[in-house]
Length: 310
Image (cartoon, rainbow, N blue to C red; front, side):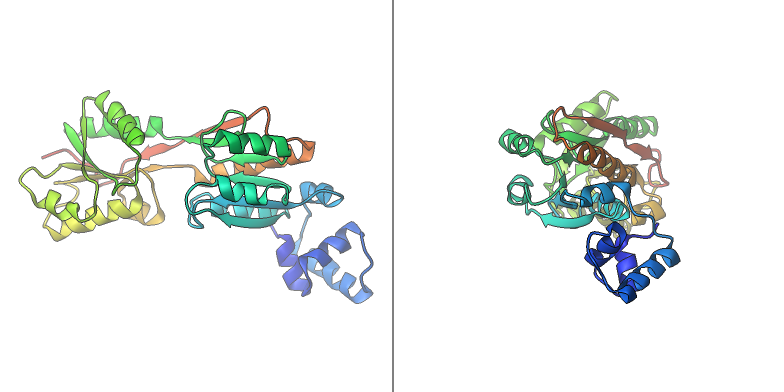
């Protein structure tokens, strides 16, 4: 699907000029009008009903507030917004999204933000009337798209137990909060497995894998740590997957290609759902109350790196 930006590039004009031609909101030269029309026809561009409606009097810019430009949902959300013909503003917050959100609320027509945990921020958003969709759990007054990882993590524990493991070592490099680790331990315990957290630092990996009580299964918090485990184990002479099971709690193309067991989240679908939900809120012209929740489920994909414990 062509975007308004692609039309503007082909016609060699600004996005604003394309919008003026389509909405007939200002006079442009016949030559410019012709270039834009030819670009629209060549690219089979169809303007978004949302962008057209909003452009007649509402702010069409949507802010994506993320803790990092590399956050998984940034690309799918930005792509879907562009397909809708909406302007995208990326606001990067070093840690919490709340302060960054307050700095742009009122200057945009809608916001897609990562998890918002500060109740005061949520109230401020509600009072502003700017539609907001969060991509994680939080205040119940905020509309959100949530990826539920619990069924997938239970499947991880069940699979490790079924393949002969009695315990697993968590490798999170300090990334996971203690509450998240406690939840993981609880879900593993329900399947008769003990989950230890001896690999909190990357430097400890070689020591742990080379010790007399080396783990038979490592659960890595992210794909990078899973790859570090794989490479370090191979360097120490492990025969993988026969001597070590590796499971990543999040997937990536590299993890998928290496067939390392992983929890895969429907990130593209979550991004599309977040934009669709925001679009509905923007069209009806109301804010975030009452909060609407869309819940998606992650899945566990066993790879060749999960085998029977030796």
